[in-house]
Length: 278
Image (cartoon, rainbow, N blue to C red; front, side, top):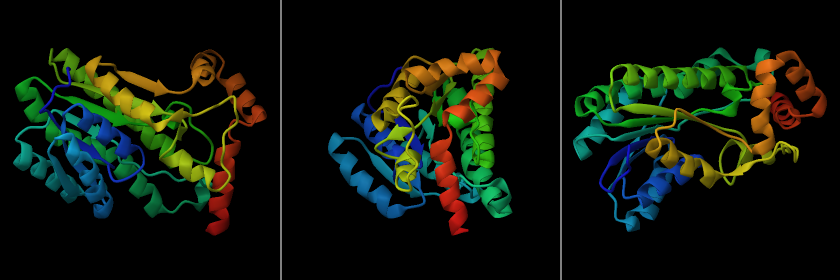
């Protein structure tokens, strides 16, 4: 789908982290925005930064674990703009810890925010997109959904689920010969904002051979996914990208080599820090 000035988008998780980059990048293309997150002050601050770009911006406080909030977000977007062309499901929460130390509430919250929320919002937006034969969903998953790391069981499960949901939704549209589509982006470690920046604060820095990418790369990938109608983008530096084939053809060797090489050291450090605080 060609991104053109005057289109309308919903972005969840827009008040901080990678959501800021996605919002500013879409706004730079002339896309009007409905910014959704729990933190209203962050949304208002972002709105003031975006308005000079000449687009319309609506702020909607939203808890993506709350079905009523999601319904209100959808209704507000339609009331303000009439139709939604792009939905970026970016909101997400993570937790690295020994699984037996994770509470049931934390598990349920992560499933709701990372997986159920995007599914419900997509379900609400889909009928009007089908009716107009136009629209695109971009779901922000994680490399953890492709290469599940240790100490991240609920997070890896929800992101793997989001990948599966997106690809199934996309295929359904293709089978219906619809121009509606969906893409999933699975970032690895991203600098400047988001999960990896928080990890660095407790000493969770990845080795040089794993590497990281700038946050703007994710925002640029959102544009590329929409305009080129890509099914899946995995945002990893060159060397880690090769491990997808390694994992496919030699999974046990892949597992052992990752453990021996210290690939998981950063995540292990974060998990140990969290466990001490529990």
